[in-house]
Amino acid sequence: MEGTMIFKRKAYAQLLTWKLQYANNYALLIEGAKGVGKTTLAVNFAKNEYESFLLIDFSNTKKEVLACFDDLTNLDLFYLKLSAVTNSNIEPYKSVIIFDEIQLFPKARQAIKHLIADGRYHFIETGSLISIRQNLKDILIPSEEMKLQLYPLDYEEFLQAVEPNKIAILDKIYQQKVAIGQDLNRKLMKDFRLYMALGGMPQVVEAYLNKKSFSQIEVVKQNIIALYLEELYKIDKTGALSEIYKSIPSQLSKDAKKFVISKATNKRSSKDNQLEQILTLADSKITLTCYDVSSPSIDLVSSKRLDKFKLYLADIGLFVSLMFGSGHGVDKDIYTKLLSDKLPSNLGFLYENVVAQLIASSGSSLFYHTWNKEQSAHYYEIDFLVPCNSKLVAIEVKSSRIDNHSSLDAFLVKFSNQVKEGMLVSQKEYQKIGNIVNYPFYLLQHKLNELETN
Image (tube, rainbow, N blue to C red):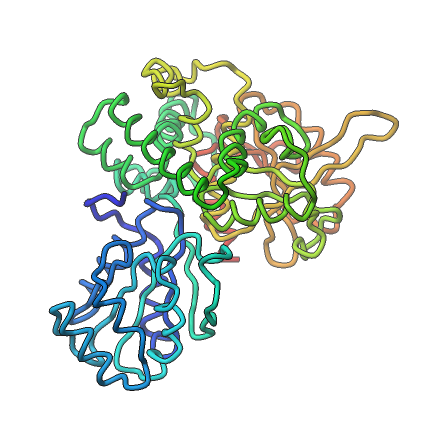
């Protein structure tokens, strides 16, 4: 699944911090969906930052390797056996051992406690579906473990791979925060729509850089979707998880207050069962869950409603393929129309998903808020709430027009004490509209970076 190209990832800096400050006391667990580049990142880091390393891939390893973990009472003997069966010669106190796809062999994860205490090597684990029940059965989860969440490439990482010169241009525009004119804005939005069309899965970006056609790229994306559906079916043979995943784009397109599981599965189920399904999907890292909060404040987690949420896909490129694909994938004309902004005008749900992806990849959990209009059956909705210092940034996503932002206006009045800033995110160039600031989609990553550092 993971490509051979080495993409510059922001997570690399987090690995450096781990090595310098925490690696003697903690293993690093890199979590993420299949295909986001976990193994590539770990191996690249090991090659650059250590004298030697050992990669053990639990999806494809010898029984003799697995047998080494049967007895950890004598770690001298353990490492002697491990070195012999892997034909490796790694230097103590100068090397790292990578446990790849560790969810497939939980016994190795349990061993981390003893291996870290021994202190001879640093340890990096990679895995997906880490927390589902069958991958935790009969093992003790080590407390000597730090976690790093790896997502598909965000927009800056994508640009670094395909058009690195554009990053400096966007940096300058963001610093100046002035209108740049419609011509340049249209060009930069077209660049962003390329990101929406492709997404941030390394294998897909690699195919684009290798000058594959959109038809060929679509095959890569459909293969990833097929793999995800297969993984979900292994977890839940009723097919409910697969149906929920496939229904995400269509439910978002209806602009409803929340995701309705029964509409995806055509089955009624208990609240406990529905909660378990959503938590399992969240653990797969292929979806993003955005919870409605009953009381917007800096403590969003305490007021989130477990029974009211929206679901997004973790990669916008896969969203496009799932939304517009037929039995043979997405027609190349769809890609052409998306890049030229000639798809049907009501594509707010598509832009909403890419905003959710960028917020999540910046390290923030996803929350939104709805409340009823007075003496009306209609309601207001703030698409996303992001904490910043001790206040909130309220975000409303617009695919086209920005003159109607009644929900954001009402929110800024009702929760004035809680709000640091009201934001529109749209295809329009940067501008201030009263007490609201409009950011074009291509500057959203910069804004999120700023919020993250504050």
